[in-house]
Image (cartoon, rainbow, N blue to C red; front, side, top):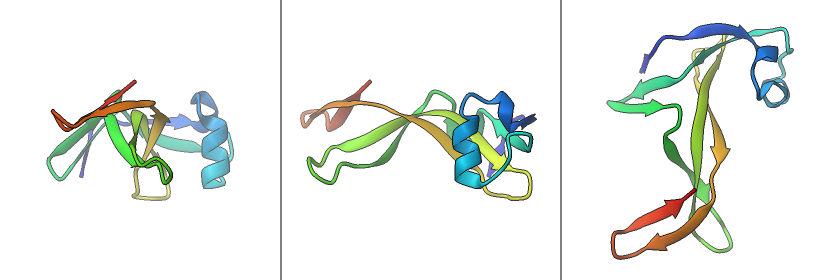
Amino acid sequence: MVVSRQNILPVCTLPFSKLLCETFAIEATDDVAVTTELCVANTLNRKGHFVAVGQDAESGPSQFGVIRSFIKCLNSDVWFLVVECATTADFSAHVYAYRVS
């Protein structure tokens, strides 16, 4: 894994600080590492890229998200993606692709 330039920031300065505090049981005054680019196994992931995040159990279409950031607690080596859910509009069998927004 290759991490681009990272910044150490207090959680309270991030727009999704409440989510981080609840998910990782950390305080708003704690520091986290933040980056906008991460390369894993020759796959470059950047802020703004779409990624598959799951599949709707009832209707079946894949669900996608837009990468907003990569976060790592300072006491850990694990990076987490912060994604915003996107809307899956439809699937085109002709080009075998989903249209998301």
